[in-house]
Image (cartoon, rainbow, N blue to C red; front, side):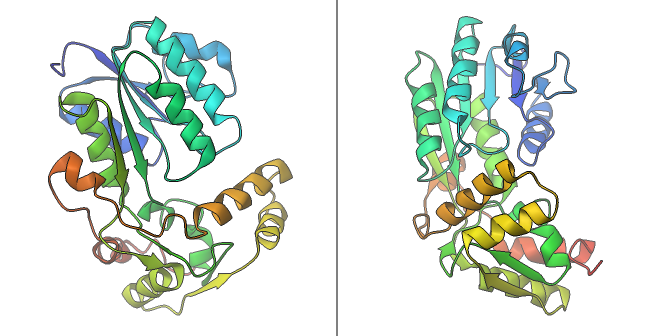
Amino acid sequence: MTTNEHTTLVLGGTGRVGHRVTRGLIERGVNVRVGSRAGEPPFDWEDPATWAGAVAGVRSAYLMYYPEIEWPGAGDAIGAVARLALDAGVERLVLLSARNQDEAARCEEAVTSLPVEWTVVAPASFNQNFDEGVFLRPLRHGVLALPAGDNADPFVDADDIADVVVAALTEDGHAGERYELTGPRLWTFAEAVGEIGRATGRELRYVPITRERFADAIAGDGAPREFAEPLATLISEFFDGRNSSLADGVERALNREPRDFADWVAKIAPTGVWDAP
């Protein structure tokens, strides 16, 4: 499949992984359609009327679900979009999934059951949650409190995730593969926060809390309770130890080692993103 003869749809093309995928595809000469509310045509997970228009006329697509692939109802929505894509003539689908999550598994089944070239990319928690996501604000205030216990996770760089997605969309040899992506070693949140503290010269702490306390804190910051509760459940389940293992997806897909969390922290710290407000 040559990279300049078709259009590739990138859902969430302005998000943490999506904008990296978009950039990587453009660098390879691919015509990209960004799937977002502001896209042309627009795509909105909350408005199914936008789905068919977004997949029309594309030959490959990167699928992700907002707010998270583990969110209740993601499987039904991903399945509906994947079937619309198939009906529209899409030949290749790459799904951003997650490790060891029931709703993510339903999303995978919805895609892998279709007669289409598919690749599943199932990463660990992103490094970028610490500087672009939900962990940033509490870190800037000095304390990261999560319902994650003391379990370890092999945090993975979003650049590695995007590199695998781009390869799966543009190269042969990835169809039918399920790539679990992790970094090269395990980190507890206490260790990860300590690494950021050393790199920034700040006293930062990680505090494990209950799912209920986390949901209350999110709601207290103004988030709707119907968002706070599923987010608390998602985090507590994702970091309950089920993902405390390494995987070789980056090596298998890209023939190189994944980026290390400590190296990433050393690169990001000089930007000042973790400075106190």
